[in-house]
Picture 1 (tube, rainbow, N blue to C red):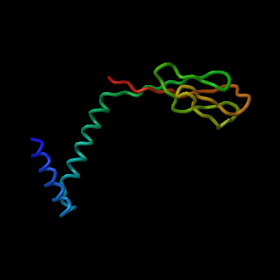
Picture 2 (picture 1 turned 180 degrees about the vertical axis):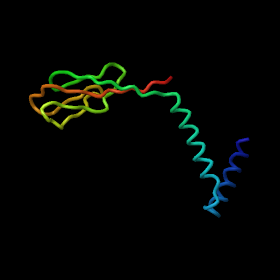
Picture 3 (picture 1 turned 45 degrees about the vertical axis):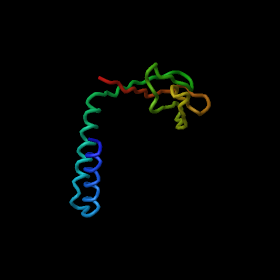
Picture 4 (picture 1 turned 180 degrees about the horizontal axis):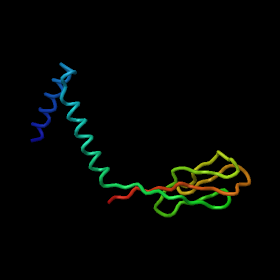
Length: 106
């Protein structure tokens, strides 16, 4: 059976190399990729919440990861520490906020 699949793929490859405009393999792979992606996306959800704190650090709850940060005092410099905490880099921050998200399987 494996040999038949290999031969079939080889025939498709030769056909595609000979006439790229009529290559059905591109359409087949595209359809297969779209089908798999659609099946996966139907089984997952993205859930996001906001977390804020006074000062320069805001932690995401367990299970969530920070996807972006916001800082008080017009500070635009921030980073994410330990894959869990938003850190505003300007001095004397009055507040920090984190957008925290998680992917869940239905």
